[in-house]
Length: 344
Image (cartoon, rainbow, N blue to C red; front, side, top):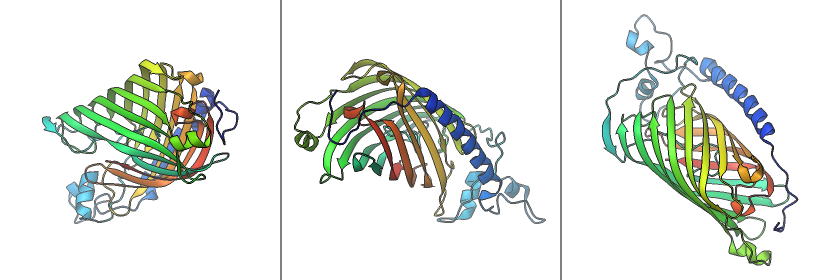
């Protein structure tokens, strides 16, 4: 096996450890959701109990009405909704839209190989400070469905792609490696459920400055052409569960066909205004070439959501497991640091 400066002998993150961590996190997130909805956010007039002069409509206003009444740039409170009563049945008309607002299936918040703009400054015990970057995004090309930018229904064709360079801040910001991804997801969604069938290509590349410093021309031609079946379910308007299965029909460089990814996202589903709101996310990615070990990522912090559903987040990220830089796919990393993420 290749050995590079800084890496210690690899360790394996077991699937059992991941499953137990995910189960505990789901309980924590569910408790957080109930606590925030019950009293953690200040009530706006639209969600407060009606007074003698209040109209029935104002007492049952939806989150979109709350946002509208808050005014441009105003502070918007989170909706006060119960777990099983958080979804109103809508019958919005379907239409054919080109370049529609919003996304029917969004990138997983803590998925470190999801296409988005992101920057994470993290410290690894043996590597020191590194800068993991994502330069890309996901966009809807055509949709036959509703026009709601937050929870659209119908069919949607998307494109997604990104470059994922890593800079070594301990060695003059050298380029250590970079992965590249491009994909075409086809989505069917209702307000609560979304199904994704997608193709993506991923390839990894070793940085030239890293090669010079380690006095090697050896690299791994890690690459994958993958079909993916994904499923997303919104337990409440703020809490999303997801899982996906990927099968590579063409692969090289130590990659093997099967991969599994699953996790949980917690964040409000409507424009937050200046105030923003907390978020929490957990993701695990398990791969066949690691005997279905892999990595686990946790993120928590503060987020803002725009009128078209775009999301800007800032917060803390913890990563443990085998590296997401696939030139080093069999190397163990444990990283903690600060990040910013933008999904448009």
